[in-house]
Length: 199
Image (cartoon, rainbow, N blue to C red):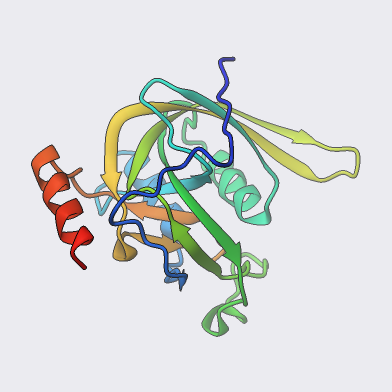
């Protein structure tokens, strides 16, 4: 498959980037809302979103090997739902995040007998536009230690979305989710950059 090379120093931090660390709000059950929409239901459009080190262009393909428990939980729930995974829309954004303490309110939450993940701290969103991607391939493999890895292939779509503090959340297992709004027009984007430059 066509791949993407991602040098760590290729990100240009644009005006409006969120550089102050902050904890993502926890919204349990986002995966079920996502699956409901995938099956034809309504509701706000939340997409599971993956952090990259450089922007993904329209038509560009990236392959990820996801081993974190938060991603294992996401894809195992997706596969168990019987929803056709290939072709689903997801999201990517250029950001750095880290795991922090487990949220107190979720420590004793029984979710099918599994313990919630650590809470997500967003260290910085380096590009204020994320991109919607198409899931083109999903494969579960087991490494030599018996641990699962989900290998995914994502292709950038034309649609982008604005990333703001209030548009990102994590589910109870630590997957980052983005709530989609309309992308800013070029004029609105330029105006926002000018406003940011004077702050």
